[in-house]
Image 1 (tube, helix red, strand yellow):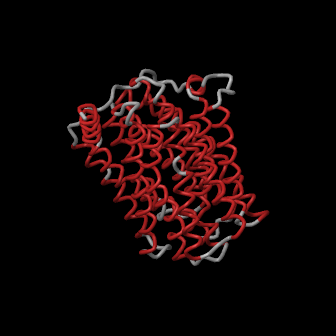
Image 2: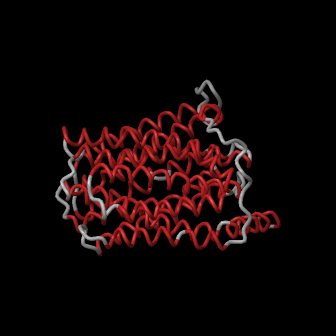
Image 3: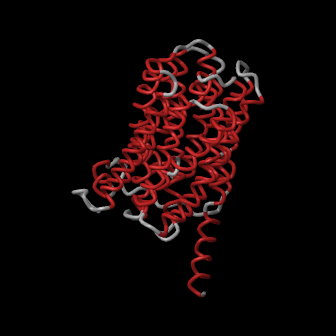
Length: 392
C-alpha cells in the first residue's frame, strides 16, 4: 500500500505539472483539426484536382519535416514557452490568410507553414510530457495527453458541420482556437524541461537506440497522413454527403481518444512492442474491411472508430518506447527525431494514396493503410523476438 500511494502521488504530481500544457493542447488541436479537415474538402469543392489535393496533404507534412530540423535550435535559443508562443502566432497568420487567397500555390505554401508550426508545437508538448514522466507511468501520461489531443481533434472536426464550407467562418474559428492555445501555457508556473542537449537532429542515433520506435513513427505518419488528407475524400467518393463526412472522420478520432489510455496503461505493464503487434494486426483487419465493403451509415462510422481505437495508438507506443531508452536532456531530440520519421511517411503517403485512389478508386486508401499496419506488426514481432541485429 505505501508503494501504491507513492506511485499514485507521483502520477498526480506529474499530471499537475502538465495541466496547463494539456489545456493549451485542447485549443490548439481543435483549431488545427478543423482547418486540416476543411482544407482538402474545400479544395475539392473549388475544383483543385486530385493531385493538388494530395499535394496539400503532403505539403503540410513537408513543413513538419522541416520543423523537426529547426525546432531544437529554436527551443535552445528562445526556451520552451517563448518558442511555443512564436509558433502559435505563425499558425494563426497562416490560417487567416487561406480564405483570403484561395488558389493552389498559396494554399500549398500556407500548409507548409502550418506543418512547420505544428511540428514545433508537438516537439515542445511531447518533450515536456516525456521529461515529466518516468518509465513506469510514461504510457499512461502520454495516453492522457493523447486523449486530450484526439478528443479536441474530433471536436474540431465536428465543428465543420456547423458552417457553410465556402465561407470565411470556419477559418476564423480555427484561427481563434489556435490563438487561445497560448494562454494556459503562458500563465503556468510549472517548470519547463531542460533545453535540448544538442540542436542537431540525430536520426541515426535514434534508429540505433530504438529501431522499432522509428519504424513505428514512419508507419504512423504514412497511415495517419494519408487518412487525414484523404479520409474525407474517401467518404465523399463512396457516396457520403458533404455534411456527414465529419461524422466518419471524427469517428476515427473518437476511437483514438478511447484507445490511447488503456493501450498506454497496458504498455506500462507489458513490452510495448507486444502491445504494438496486437493493435496493428487488429487495425489492419478493420482497414481491409473498409476497403472490401465500402460501408455506409453506422457500419462506416463503427469501422472508422475501430481503426482509430487500434492504429492511432501507434505513435503513442513509438514515443513511449523510444523515451524509455533516452535521458531527460534528450527528450526534445527524441520527439523531433520521431516527428522526422513520421513526416517522411506523411509526405510520401498522401501522394501515393491519391494516385492509387485515382486509378483503383477510393477504397485504395485503406488497402494502403492496412498493408502498412500489417507490415508494422511483423517488424515489431522481429524486434520483440530479438531477430533485430541492432538492439532488442
